[in-house]
Length: 345
Image (tube, rainbow, N blue to C red):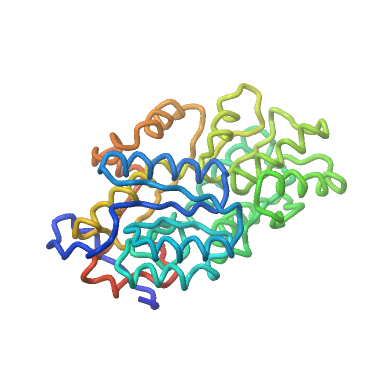
């Protein structure tokens, strides 16, 4: 499916299909790097595989796209039945993922297609959630005035709406100036640190920093190294990474919020649906990762959910806080796999 489609709600009672013939009862995770968000995905996948009696293997590629392509091809040759893959260059691995699907296997991806189950956060809503928290802080604690740094990922079109929401929300405030709007290279903690060091040479007094958790955590390190970190600053990120959570829970930290995407919870869901696929069951074609602003007031409940994603998955009310599911697909209908940048927005 290459054209945008509005899916109906997932029907868990859809008729069974055939189970894919000849495939191993194995889930593999091709993990682009070791950032904590992806470690959370691994945590959930590994537990789902264990709970369903499947073999599990994780291969970390350290941002090496050529290696990713080779690994995916080798997994297909080994007749591995289920694959979850992330990459810094989704276009480069697209053909390999399609070939895996054509062979009958389950493919789960996070944001970019192609996939039999594609996950995406409503990206504009995700950015707006963080921006609203920042604006509230600016008005309450900074007198309506702030110098803002946006550490973006505009080069990845699927994530760009996050940063459109940030510009929309901050651009209308007369006392707010966006002094830097830049994509760190690479989009990692170190990239955030290096980029913030350069920004501080021109703008030594920063009030707000927004972006993905990894780069904002790097920016925080740079602020501290320069003696420019203050308790009244607002640093906020996206992903709910454990280090960000630790900072939020630290008294006096400038890190005030992270938009939690609960990667162990959706990782567990991806693993469960991979197991269902191998049994011939119908699974969702797409899944929303629902964003919410994680602060000190809701940390304890959130951390409990991350440690026990199985309990969340099998409790419809708890699962509904994190995930929403759309469409149906199975082995017999795999020609309808998503190959467009799906979003529920």
